[in-house]
Length: 570
Image (cartoon, rainbow, N blue to C red):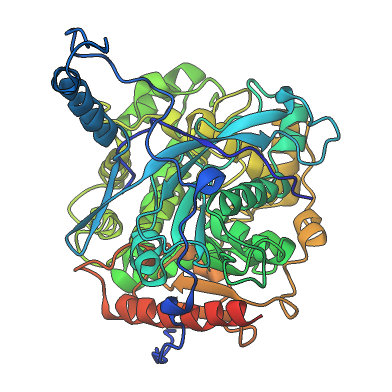
């Protein structure tokens, strides 16, 4: 199932990364790192450092005397500048500053896994055309050698531009002597299995089953590279996959689908109930509404009143198609960004009021630590300002996402490219723009993001239906979504026969309404954070962290001590 691939090579990459509570009882550790074999990989298993492909520039034109008749000291003196230049260049090349926690600075390396399969389910993968280079990031400073864990952070619906989650790769990595990597998801960023994919390419290649095998193949290659032994041997390197949101779903699936490769699945803010369609079509935005109103009482009512006023004003007006950009501009939209498909006042009202759930979805995910300076609270203050009109409130709200566009909101920033791309795309919580937005728009036809707005939410009521999604996906890619396809393929609705999956959720996160909040068994555990938002615990530890996050991180560390000990014993 996993033929051993060629080991990856290092490359030069970006240097800047993105930036009901459990009673926590810490258990004593019986996981002794000193009991592991501390051998160092050598030869084929040695860890390559830096960019071995890019030659150093010769910055010293002085001739190097190599004739045997000259004294050796002359050669050493002449060669010294070149040696110094080489050493300095090597240091500069493979240091990548990523994140600070506890006054520490960590560094990572950017690599390409050039032996990744384009199609893991094709028989025609023996030639070079069946391979592509998949980007990943690597941090090995804490690695204690074979016998210590491998932490695999799974990328999601966007370019991977750094090593995420310092709580994982640095804090836990240092404690367990782990080697950490983060893999970029296929069809995002530079990890493109095929260029200019056809509709058939997307249907076959942009699917979770392919992404899971990507992770499995890279894991086995990395274990071999690090000199890790087989399972059951002292030098085996236990594998923990890690992910937040959609990648959290993938992390759980790795433990379910590939238990021969993955020992522990850490799934933060992972909406498994969303993808099994067992939480209801309104649960997400109802939760977003509840969090906003709990944080700023009255916010939900004021948001809805404003949106209804804006909607009714547009619908009641006598507008022709040529008038629509001007009306949109009066509401804070960049006039030049009005797409051609918005050709009626009904569509204008629908798409403009959709901006509220899109932006509140982002503000909700970032609502940690919860405070008055957060974007969520800023947005609520705009709507709760009794001295401004509904039109002024709406304009001020959308301008929060202006991002330098002369104070107006660019609709293109929320419309995925391609024919029939729209504000109301396949994922009503937001798709995004550019190539990544295009890929996620297609993936949401496969994953089926069931997120509608109920009468009880603070948004204009809008019922999500599979019929609506089918029509959209058919127009875009001639693709027909199947609601139970993922559950039938991966069987993640029943976790009674699975072990060692950790679900974590911030209870201020809208996606917590579609995640596992209760223990399934002794080894399928849920940890909840009363003040947390979207995978908030995976950063830090930080000075601003709330007590529940800090206590939860300590609990998680001790839980992993036990679980890794069990893996070693097994």
